[in-house]
Amino acid sequence: GSMRAIRRLSSSRTAVRGRRCYAKVTPTTTNNQVENHHEKYNRSGLPRGAYSFDDGVQTAQFSEAKNYDIVIIGGGHNGLTAASYLARSGAKPKILVLERRHTIGGAAVTEEIFPGFKFSRGSYLAGLLRPTIIRDLELEKYDFKYLPRNPSSFTPTTLSSTHNGKYLLLGSNEAENARSISQFSTKDVESLKNYERFLDSCRDIVQDLLDGNPPQIGRGFGETLDNVQRVFRTAQTAILKSKDLAGFYELFTGPAANILDRWFESDILKATLATDSVIGAMVSPYHAGSAYVLLHHVMGESPGGKGVWSYIEGGMGSITKALAKSAIAGGGDRVTIEVNAEVDKIVVEGKKVTGVAMRDGSFIKAKTVLSNANPNHTFIELLPNHSDVLPRDFLNHIKNIDYSGGSMKINLGLKRLPNFTCYPNSGGLTGQIVGPQHIGTIHFEETMQEIDVAWREASLGFPATKPVIEMTIPSSLDKTLAPEG
Image (cartoon, rainbow, N blue to C red; front, side, top):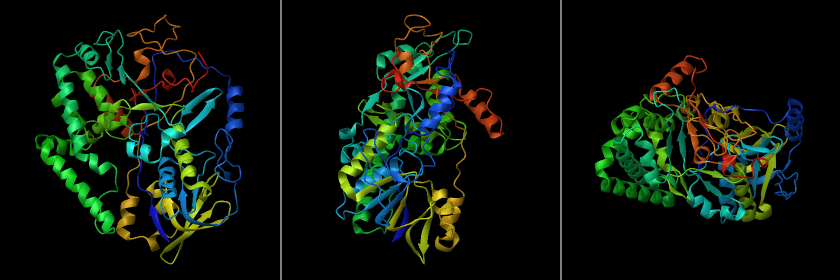
């Protein structure tokens, strides 16, 4: 047996910012209703059991089997992607997925927090889930459906601001983008087109590296050959796009603010784009290294095209449910997914992993253990004797990974749509007609300096006076998430 941590086979945008809205928020349920609802839906602490889909179909009858070819720790999207691919492999392994919580999903999960209101509690947009994975695992057969957002971004301003209540609305329509941007800068209309062409070029350079393992030599002839071929294709693309190589280098090493200042003159456009560079990270757009996350702007791929970020019908949990169904379809009764199944430690005998010890005291034997957990939890917390079985340099690397972040997520059930003074709802304050201002990501920053000040305050241990905010209203496109009206 061997121990290995699962590679990031798929990814979704997982980090979120705290939400603030100009609209008045009115609770739709009483505290007692919420408490009773939480008690009903909080199934943690229940004994281990086979995961059951909403239609009541279990992944497998729970058994006391103690011997598997592969055990996967964690039922998040990465663990389930691995299970789905392995279930289809020629070796036909017997696979067990162990999820600590009462439901699968990890960061890609949908849960009913208030009666009738379903929320994507972790990640909230999809775009980095590779099209190759969607095709290979036939996820669309299992109720996976993108809901592309257009417009994709809305930045309101107050009537008393220097922008006098103008707003920035960006989407896939170039003419509409130009009309919106020209309110703040006519020069930036053309600059945005050229900027996006530059980011497209940078994306094309790294595209071949996205669908494979990180390039490594010495992993067997087949994998080494594949790595060499992908690196060669990447080098070929880089040569073809040599005029962008200097900018490409800066994108991966420099501050986002430097790049945005060079491309644009409008503060509100720069601030809107700069939020991509700090998403989920404890950094300022003025920090070296923050620029590469600007590639998020064009890395998303969904039916609307490259650079498109979408909602998922039924919330982000629909991704992991589709992956689980795909794993079961690919492996049949060789695949078992258990919930309320917390791993206490990875068991090592000599220099070999032999299985996992469960929190309930049981032992499950496995030839191979994959971990969907983060590296620190996998190699430090789940390996009590890690100093004896792992190389010192590797351990030092794992121990010094920086997990710091300043993000929080607030989920709200609203009686009505938010109403923005600068872009009022159709039908007045109580209007319930979804408009362009409700569909995409809503930003509240007007300058990059605001983002920098928020970081400075947070880095000193204080809640930011004006936090960086991204607000989304998934029910504007997805009618399955909230009660009618």
